[in-house]
Every structure is written in C-alpha cells, then in structure tokens.
Length: 415
Image 1 (tube, rainbow, N blue to C red):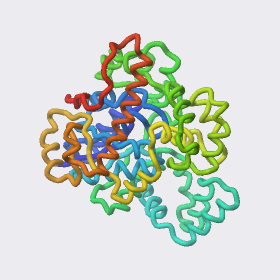
Image 2 (image 1 turned 120 degrees about the vertical axis):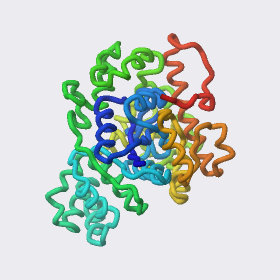
Image 3 (image 1 turned 30 degrees about the vertical axis):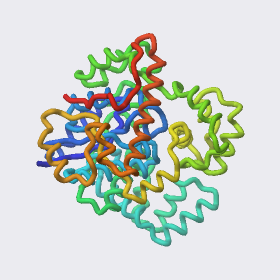
Image 4 (image 1 turned 60 degrees about the vertical axis):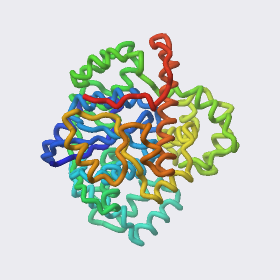
C-alpha cells in the first residue's frame, strides 16, 4: 500500500486542487491520499471562506481519502511553522511515502538544494545576511545576497524565491530534511493562473480569484465553472447559510479583543515585537474594520499578511510561550480526523498500527488519549472553530435556525 500526503487549505477547493490530487496519485503510484488541511482560519491571516467541514466534504468527493486538521498554532503560522507542523503530522502517521506539493518551478531537486542551504546556513551566509539586514535591506534582498556569497552556483536560480509556492515547497523540503524523514518530496508544476492572479479566465484560476469573485457577486454561480461538478450542489445549498465568510466579518470581534487585552500590550503573541505592539496601541483609536486596520499597521518590513496573522494570534489567544513549548516537544501531539472515504478502511487500520500520535475520530475521547500538552493545543483548535461558527451564525442568522455552537457534537464527514 502506497500513500501520498498533501498539505492544503482549499480556500475554496477548485479544479486545480482536484487536478493536484489526481496527479499526485498518478505521479507516486499511491493507493491513498491523505490531506492535512487548515481548519477555520488560514495562513494568510483570515477566516476560511467556507468552514472546514464543507471543504473536507468537497475534498473527499474529489479524490482525497482522509482529511486531517492542521492545528491552529501552525495553520496561522509563518511559512516555516505552517510547513513544519504539517510535515511533522504527516511524518508521525507512519504510513506516508511521499509528500506532493505544487510549485512554480516544478523542480524538486532544485527546491531541495535551496532547502539544504537554508537549513544549514554556513558562516558566510550568516555574516552576509546579518550585514545586509543591518544596512537596511529587506529580508528577501538580504537572503539573496547571502545565497550569492555562500553558494554562487545558485545565483542564477534565486528568482525562484520570488514565487510563493516555491517558497512553501522549500519549507516543506526543509522540514523533511530537519526530521530526517523517510517521506520523499515530489512536486507538480503549477499551471493556470498565478497565486496572486485575480482573473477568472484561466483554465485553473487561483483561489484568490474565486474569493474576490464571490465578494462581488450575489450568487455562487460566478465561481462554479472553476469548481468540480460534484461540489456544485453543496455550493448552491450552503450559499448564504454557512458561507462566504470574509476578513471584514471579524471586524467587531477583533476590535473588542484589542480593546480588552488584559495586559495592555501585545508582545506575548507570536510575530509581535515591542515596535508592533506600540504601533497597535497608538493606532487603535483609528480602528474602523479589520482589513483597513491591517493596512494601517503594515510597513516596509511588515506585510499585510504578516500583520493580519499577528492580529489573529491576538483574537484567538495564540501565545508565543505555548508555541515555543510545542516546538520543543516535537510540534504535533494528535491527528484529528475531519473526514474520510469509507473505502479507506485499510489506510485507517495501517495508521492505527503505525502512528506515533493518537488518531482522533471523536473529541470526547481526547481526554483519555492525549497528554496535557496535547489537550492544550486541541482546546485552541476547538476555540478557534467556535469563534468561526459564531461569526457564521450571526452573519447568516436570517437563513439559519438557532442551534448550539459545539465542536464536540460535529459529526466526522464520511463519503
């Protein structure tokens, strides 16, 4: 039995994602595909457009065999932490043969070469990087200069570091190398629209284009031609009942959270130093909504995405000290199932025999299966989902009957 792993957000799931799953199985000869997917908040620092259960169901209907939730501490982390958490989860299952990811360059050997260089920085690299940063260069500029000084044979290829999927692919390779994992990386060249392209004309448009299209439309029909046919009934049924959710839907909740911070400052959260904390406090009286506040806070050295992630750390009470604790204890302490195909019975049996972490199919069992550290991490995932569900509940109150918000009562998805 061969198994391929995919790390994804599916925000939302589209034809390119279905192609990726299909090609990943073909390329690796895999019998099964395991997807590690972000939960209700995603790495760019925003709520997912659709909840994790709807995205899980669509993924299972289009080739995934098992979907596991990436804990919120990593789903909302930088590329390094996002990749490290997801790779560790796949590695600890004990059954994954390959990790298959998309990239702009399509060259896994080149990505691995860069990963090895960045993982084992030599003195020339470190000194050049430090000097360039002191001289006021941005991190990407300083990193490229350090690569040219340390590994001049790679100078002609540093352009690949300007592409987001290449950068994430390098982080996946770094995480595998760091763990000395038996999981082998492979990559599929990204086709269709670029990552940041908002056009809808491409054969495979970007997830960003779909999100932007829904913002400007009063019907899901504007994006259905970019999604697998199997997803269309679900998309139509759930529209304006559970989705779409956008960053500005967090605005009031975020404002309240910033105003009510008990410590009065924000340096206890990841990615927030004294300078950014002071800037948040100074500009808070100008707060209008979540997106515009991110724009207000961004600077030459802090992108909109980094700011929005930092603010979500505050909203969800994701603390720097907790993250350091998890990293010190090998990052992942459970594999929470969001859904599976009923034909994947042999895969689940193999995982139960080989996994290094508990496979959670019922949250009610977590107290008996997890360490206190694992429970602490899981409780944050549950809290994040409850926050998200509360947003959905009130945004679409006219379309939904009032129901209890309780992650413990959500049924695992079976297809």
